[in-house]
Image 1 (cartoon, rainbow, N blue to C red):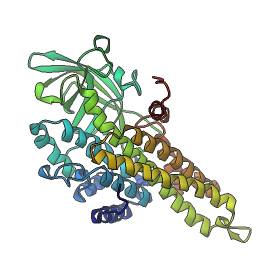
Image 2: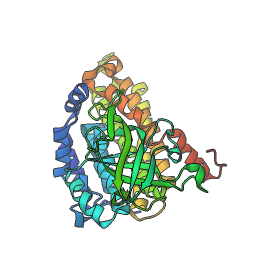
Image 3: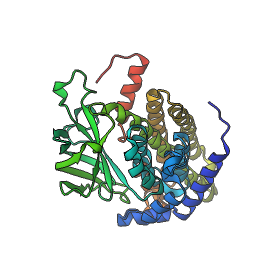
Image 4: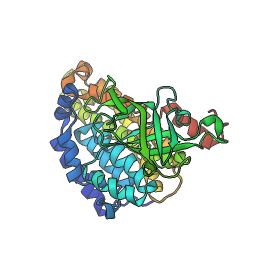
Length: 388
């Protein structure tokens, strides 16, 4: 692994920083309060080429890798966008782009990837279900053969962009779990048009990130052709895995980015705010907890870079992505907590934004996989007996 950054990384960082300076914390405070999707920010990401970072050049993308996407996400988060810096990229430009790139037919790539690269097409990615939760192998959404197509039925929950997506990648079972030899068998992915009358979307009221809706999605008797199948029938788990590792890298970038943002604001405040005739930053009870937490953020950042580097090389990176996600989340939450404490009572005030970043970063403890499930994976890799 080479720690010398190529020239394009400096360009990605500067471009992301320029965008973040235009869409600053006050902008996101307003979008959050109004519950309004930031369409102008979405378009700006498209014009900068960020939606196409992971898409091959022949489909209008940049042909870059997860290292570049992680850098873009982290910089956007750290320079003022908070969670939006990752949120607006991770599903369509990350998960959907990789699923189509790696598992799609030539026709699917030509149909979807060019529009994704420009930001003209939005995807949602429907995995989670109310009953299955984190255990994706227990999904109950069914896809049943019907002549030259399939009929889809089921219910999904916490699906990002479902309220405004053009298409959805739907995770289903084409063979029930009790009819397969291994639980990883029998899953299949489908590309679904969101304007189908059999799809109903209902936004979920939530605690934060209200500039993007998270939704329940009801799928009733939705008929799709064979050409909607993404990858091989029954092999959907392995197609899905191709997207889960990048998603975890993306949320690791969010955690370290938001931590950097909150810490930078806390350091500025600690230099300006005076108590007992000195800036509060001179008191080690203020500076040391933030410093200690940020040291762990820097360490987690390195593991995220390693996981992305392995992914871009086509190597197994499940262990590294789980370590990166788990470490970044714990370090990031700790850093934002102590940053908020540095503001004292003002840390609870909306106008200083840190309370919003606190709400945002706590989501990463639960998504895209819970910390407990990440630790389960890591423990198994360490040699502990499998616990699930």
